[in-house]
Length: 624
Picture 1 (cartoon, rainbow, N blue to C red):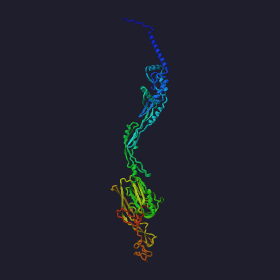
Picture 2 (picture 1 turned 90 degrees about the horizontal axis):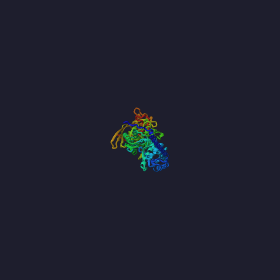
Picture 3 (picture 1 turned 45 degrees about the vertical axis):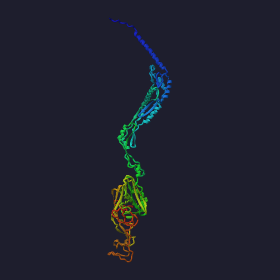
Picture 4 (picture 1 turned 90 degrees about the vertical axis):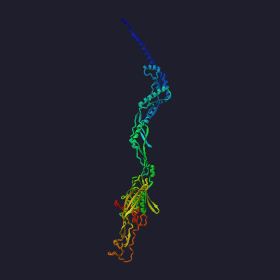
């Protein structure tokens, strides 16, 4: 069966669209009317809050008042904490200097940003949609925030390098901190985000209590430089050093304690430490041999050697001896230094105050400025022989002096011969030398002070050998009366000899450590000189060594003389053997000493010291 075609009624579809369009127009008109009405409202949309304050339905003035009261009451309770490393910088909402007027206006603006959308937004708020209005932070940076930036950069702005120090038996180090500058372009955004989070939490908690939001402070860091651990070792690691005495001020310096540590251990501890952390490693401390306190107690406490000689001779000679002693008294010789007698006294000249006294020059006894100072140098040498100090330079006199044991004298002459010794100890030494009266004798005493930790001491000894008894020579002198002779009491005779000296070094228990050969001293012989009148002829022709009397003749064939009459015996002369003992000033002569004796071998005559040049010394006049 065929179907029947229905007839289409004209304009039926258009009516439907007209109806729909009309309805839409009504709706649109109504919506536009709503948007216009919303735009004319002077109250804030429902369910709107700003800065945590519900300002729904309020006018801007009402909202401004509400915001002002809320900031006053709760501004300090809404906080953020800007954190960097182990530091925290708090900031409250009250610090932000917010404008209540601007924030009331921001709340009113909520949903009104677009005319065609504000109607829908209003309806959404009516339906229960809540909205936290974007806070109006203002264009100016709050003063509190600017102060926070300054505080951060003062505390961590500069890079802090590692610091270190020796504290007791530990090396303490604080690891450096990175320097930081606040990234200001990010700071406000971070602060605003932090407060918005705090406000949301505040509102969710019913606007009660203290709310704090933590945010990382945006900074740009500069890390500290890693220390030069080898350089630190060079700086801090030192060898122990004993205290020393200043030779000019005599002040004792501080000692240095030795320090040593493991560089690799320090580096490992550094790598494991956090920035700003303090840590330590052990150090090895070595105490020096002498601290300041111990050295002050040791200085010059011991007599290393002592010697003395009796002062004899003329007043000028004694004066010179004492003047030279005064120049040497109190001299301090540092360890390793060399004492020079000539350097200490200087030239023994008249300008230096020295007087004229007898010396030996060219084998003759003469007067010269400075005579006698060799007794000072010899006294010091004699004291030195009683110590273990090192002799550097010493010469014996041309003739035996008699005021020290044979072989233990030291001649000096400025610019020609010197007496020198070295301080071979670990401590300063000091010479004291001055005259003292012992009974009726004036004695020059020398003591050498130092520090004798080991108790070592020395005993010198000497013996004489190859003695040469003075020969006799005749010397013409027209001042001698004819028929007589006279022994020359100026050019006194001396017994020639050699002397071997030793120094035995003992430990504190008396055990012999070493026997030192101090050398052989060679002393010349000087003959006895008999003066006669040359008119008496050649002494070789005299009978029995007696010059002929005036008016007599000598038989050249027999050697006999004709006595014209009774005369005085011309053979009576001054006994040349009777002399003055240089040590006592009494006429004792020169007793022979047995080999091996340590007693002084006295010269044949007088107490004058002999100072002719000795072996190895330029042949010049030698001062006594």
